[in-house]
Image (cartoon, rainbow, N blue to C red; front, top):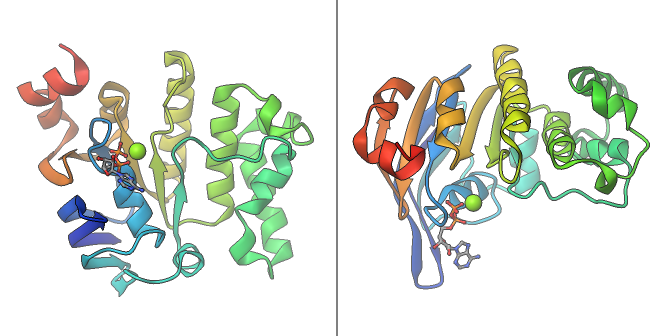
Length: 235
Ligand SMILES: Nc1ncnc2c1ncn2[C@@H]1O[C@H](COP(=O)(O)OP(=O)(O)O)[C@@H](O)[C@H]1O
Ligand SMILES: [Mg+2]
């Protein structure tokens, strides 16, 4: 479904990604674990077309997308929910959601239908659809960010640390929703530092350190890996 091979990225003379090779099969929920600064966001920004890789191939359903324009990549079905949510706090919840449908702007009927589906998935957002997004709680704002990404009609959804800054109970709610989205057929790639919660819902996971994939395996394998436990689980 999504396949990165030999992807490298530099910021000036700094090599942030070095030969990244990873994939997500159709229907999989794949977790990308890594500490702050490991390169998780760089992978997503490169796959989204916001950074240009120095080398490598990025294929979405077999088609090369490395170097394609961001809007084109969204239109093909690879959609990112960015780190830090990036909402417009003054704008209403509904308007924030609709921004995600920009690449499908010619399909008003489809977008209204999609909005209904998103509001059904997040009943609290239906209640607050006319409120400014900035007035919602952190967890609700994360739901808006996820909902906005869904408005882009992803076949592959990349989520960049959606649990950041949320209380454990709220993290669980967010991850339950991701599980549901995945079960309904969307392939999910989830970048996290919260290994404990993320590995619980993952089918497969990678560990990234300093721009390189250092480990890949099942959630059980990684949970039982001493280095992983020490670095990300604290046990
Ligand atoms: N725009 C940028 N310019 C220069 N260096 C950057 C930029 N963005 C990220 N970096 C550096 O690249 C490395 C990987 O960052 P990032 O992909 O944001 O990691 P993560 O998302 O895993 O925390 C870090 O060392 C970070 O400081
Ligand atoms: Mg990041």
